[in-house]
Each structure stands twice: as C-alpha cells, then as structure tokens.
Image 1: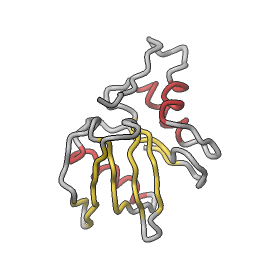
Image 2: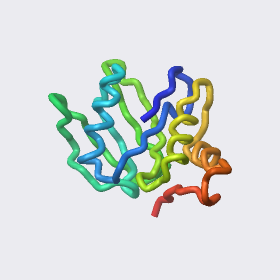
Image 3: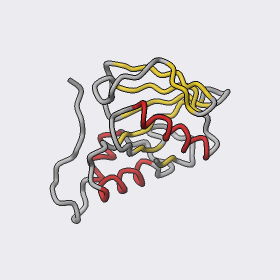
Length: 142
C-alpha cells in the first residue's frame, strides 16, 4: 500500500492486494492504514472486481461499514476515514500483476502534487523496458 503525503486532488495512493477476497484483504488494508494514523470507518468497492462481503466487517476491535457500487472505475476503492470523514481514493493494482509493474504503480500513485487517474497510473507504470509485454492489466466493468 502507498499513500500520498499531500491532500491534493486525484488518487491518494494505491493498494496491491493478494486476492479479490475482501474478507481477507480488507482487514490487512485497514490495519496498515491504522499504523499510519488513518482510521477507516467506511470502505466502498466496485462489485465487478471483488467478492461481496457483509455490510459491516469486524476489523480488530472496530467495525468498518462496507458498501459496493455497480458503476465507476473498477480499479478504484473509496475509504472514509476518521472523525473528519476524510475521503481517500486508492488505485487497486490487480492481484495477479507482476511485482515490477505493481511497485511502479504503487510509487506513482503516491507522488505528491499529482492528480492522476487510475488508468493514467496503470498506463504509465506499464511503460518500462523491463516489463515483458506492453499490455496493461486493467480490469473493465461488465
């Protein structure tokens, strides 16, 4: 997982989960964010990308409200955090993505002062001579 250090527009970072099983992956993300002082109260995800989970998920000693959506970018999850209801959008690097590509996407999504879209980050991360193919592992809705 990576996070931007500024509060500018656009993506606020990226997440590279190991699977599309939110019951397994979400507690790890929430715990990683909590270690950085970011307390997640709500998590919203695209139905087309993830296995469904209950509307409330116990994470440690807290409950995180969970909701899905059918439209929007399938490569982005949204989090509401803390008492101020801070809104974070994270690029989701698909679980099966190779390590070099993933590392580049994580780093690029966390650059302060940029307002990149998920597709722009994934496209730019794929432009590296060490990558075996020019294909971008971007999931599409439907």
